[in-house]
Image 1 (spheres, rainbow over the protein chains, first blue to last red):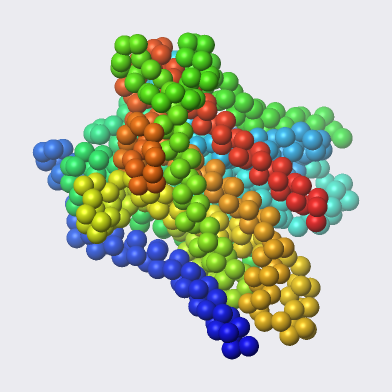
Image 2 (cartoon, rainbow over the protein chains, first blue to last red):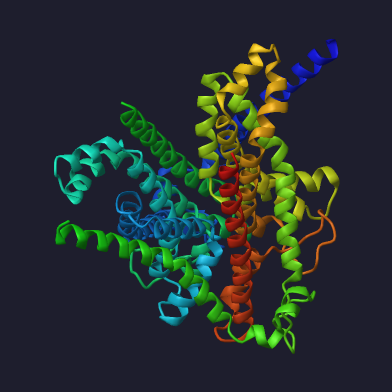
Length: 281
Length: 289
């Protein structure tokens, strides 16, 4: 019996340790980045271009921030409406369940496609075949394809979480489907859909592999011209480290990137909780 | 139903079907771009010979070294992540105080939100330095380092999905255990885990798919050599890293370019097969219950 007690407490100990370890990982990453990168992040770092020799060893990351914002913004612009329409079909109009199952399956598989393969596809189609070259347009398209399944699945789930009674009551009152959707179901799903958009934004902001082959340059103005290459935070970090330009600058860039993503993720979680609470009422 | 309602329905349907078929288009396009390489090298040679030398005359294309690296890194990551992930899932589902669980769950989300290039960067500056200093290695880059960092990256997926599987076990089992005076630990390990194990394995397959397609972390950690790795501590270059490194320098239309697309096609096939197997698996499981 004593042995049994011992094993039971041992197990509890192991489980507690593994749970606390998770907290420790995030804490360690943040503390380490702040410690190594914090001293180098300043307004000047955020608002100036890379300088020095080799280029990037001094100065800041302003064009990279701009480029990342352009990439995310355009990627959302390309993919948001198709994703919403797909979600609406899957949640509200799927009378043929076989086709809906197939579409669901395809979109889920799309979510699993490695981002480098999407980069490969856009490279062949946009950069080479259509002659765009390494460009903001190609990169944002690659990111759009990458976040499409995230947007579609999260919006679908947000719509499906809305109480079925609203739809039944609307139908029984003779209200048309599209009116119900636009005025009753969609407004209630907005927090959930927004949370999905934020998650997708964070996903796109951190993606490196697809833009590495389609959009990113070591140095660029990133002024939003569609057919020019751009800088981007994650690629800039990769270059700073990989070309041995400056470790300090790399830590600072990583801190800026992680800070941005943690804020986005935090907002997404908050919205998700908000939408769960409204649905529960 | 009115004409207008029907038109709206058709509108949503056509966008949905076109978007979903994009995946099929991507597959065919990548296959088309790989073009003549399949006939030129032969499928078997492409998958089983040991040299990748695009610049040699004649150039040699075989992805076996990279294929082995990919699988080694991914399985290695799972071996590290599974015990830890399962323990954490059991903790969250059965033992953690509610307040602590409410803290850990969003932390898992935040860990998934950190981009792979940051994991790769930290792995390269901290972990690899540590391996070099403490084991006195000339270079710490290895499949092992890549596995370790990948394990950290897939951990949140394993934990979140395994926890769901554990939570979906009917409450009656827990109540019956309490009524019989069985300890909570025994219930969790001997009753709940066996009941949830299929869902937990589903989580593992999902993580495997992620690990196979991951690019940046393995690119920065695995060491990038094009030889077949014979140990976990050897260097290697997984398939995604090969594509990322060589695509920019391959002239379109050459056999090198085509070989890279053939590589991409193999990679996407592996991932889709993993994905389909998990769907089949879950489908059978749900019917079996």
